[in-house]
Amino acid sequence: MSAAPRIHVHLVAWTDEPWDLEESLFSLVTQHEVVPSVSVAVPAANEGFARAACERLTRLGGAAELQVGTPPGWSAEAQAVAVWVAGTVATPDHLARALALCGTASAIAPARRVLRRPVPGRPPYALRKTRRFTSASPSLEELGRDPAFLGRCLVATARAPGWLPAHPEDHRRWAAEAWSSGPVARVAGPPSVDIPDLRTERGVRSLDDVRDALAELRYQGPRWIERRAPLTFDRLRGWYNRMRDRAR
Image (cartoon, rainbow, N blue to C red):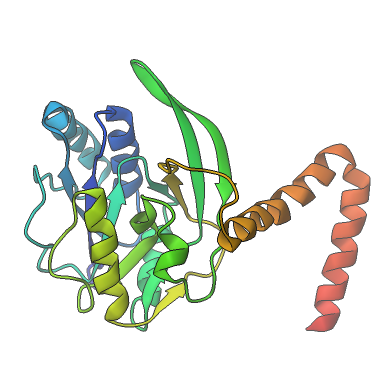
């Protein structure tokens, strides 16, 4: 039986909020069918917390290799590289699904933005989660409206830049190098990643913002009908399924 593929994830904390860091580490060590090798770059005030969190969570069976600061590159045996901002979380099958696409293109996962409110001494409170539109071949401009957008991306080491980004301005430069190395493609299926909403400006500012709003409406619309008119929802769903089967 062959060993599970290894993926290097560089986890960067841009704030002193420890809960964001632990949430992302937990999401990484519970990934299925891959072995995440995790390096962690944190502010000096959080180094002790990061070490303790890694020690606790590696007991779950994951491989969290704490390296304080930004290492010069990824683990030598890694097949792919991802860069997460603390607060990013993913479904347990996310990295395996994304890796399956990395043979032909860099993988971009559908995602939701999570807007949160800090609570002193406690985990942050989630105010809103909204779906993002993802085109079949996402451009850097489409994704880059979110500072934490690299949490959606998985790049094969053969195509990844030979360094790891730390500061926010480095993330776009790293992505630009990765985009120029080959094609990118969307991972099939529903959103598998939640990224923290770190934007300083919100609202409808471009066509991509309109697409995001429509993607959220397409998801929330049926949920709204289901809650308020369950019988009507069941009939509409049955009609939709019959029409889809006929189309096949």
